[in-house]
Length: 597
Image (cartoon, rainbow, N blue to C red):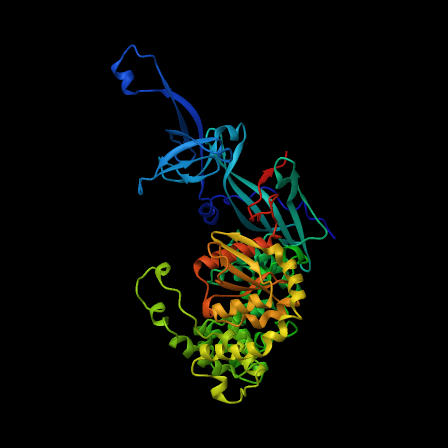
């Protein structure tokens, strides 16, 4: 196999630093400060000409955006922020803030966003004020390889506050007709003083075994239909994939091209099928917690598409009419999965049914096929949601700030309905009776059935599972975490699950055996000021490291505070749930990057 390292230029293409996505992404400038002594012009020196001269310790700041300097009041800070900094007053709030090395602030002269650094820490070198990533496309070699090169663009600031842009070649993916090679421009390094960091190489390295690690690209500099047509993959439609979707979801060009090399008919799905489904499938594959560690040369495994077929409808498991409906309704992955899974159970959903599913907006309706009539369940759940107390106020068209709107109370979603059916089967109720399957008030019926089942099974389960619960708690103790007034701990016993269910009025107690035997993982979210009071209950998929559900009182949704805590916790879990020397969670941080000597 030909080595391609010498074919790929390490010099950035002309115009890359002026490209709008790069220019807009570099928001932070640099502000350098150092202590200076200036004459004291106080009242004593003005009135008494024989008074000895005095000096005051102040701070001189220099901004790399406007090039201006200013004298600011000196103030002491901790060692992490340089030992000293300066005081800056906010013009809007008139509040005085203490700014030190490493902080982000605004320039008091021009108002630009700046990263602050002490001059002595910069020394004779520079510091990175801001950085972003960019990808460019080119065709190289006589074999017309399609090359995607990833660049790290950094705005670096010198001690004198002079700014310049530094473009570093980070990665490159070289696509031939049937294979892809990766070129590495960085490596993980370790220093006793700096710890783990990324160092950039002077030349490309070409690993034999590799994983796709670049991730998403908001755009590709230099990509055009003409460039694609001139490459060895003239029909890949990479330019179409990058530009045809009007969603906020990121695009993964390396994954798409690797999928095209393995399944060339993906272009049929892109042009004549349901492009949003393809977009969602690639995003889902890239979002799996183990992708960066386990993917083999960037190839996504998407088994839901019938790749042996050539026509888009057959690839998606649809008829021509069903595909036409999906294109008219702009189906994404959720709606397509619901349709084909329901169709596999012998039930056909109409366009109105699909719109009901979209309006319901509950991803858990995908579990309905095979459990009961899907179309009727969708209409039933939609009516239950509309009739729920407080929903009129929540869905109103007033201009009230979303943060001030009350969190809606519990409403009947697909999970509640499925749990209710499961409990009815457990206590012997006849679900063939429509009044039993679809009760007038699902929340009340769910609570009643849950209580009946609890009375039957709770005592029988508690003692046999006690030992498994203790083992399970030790296994999950590594995920104990606390931040921002909240903490999360694993369930420790069936009794704790029962207390959680009684307080929050949901059926988490039924998960006791699955949790104890390791088939799922249940965690309790608590406020640190009320550690003994149930607040939210979370279910974790340990293999995919994703949250299956996170419910509060009567299965209510997550507040913004709980959602932010969940996002922080799951990012820490995916990063390895590391702790520092004191046993405290080490939150994921951006790795420091330096150039190799």
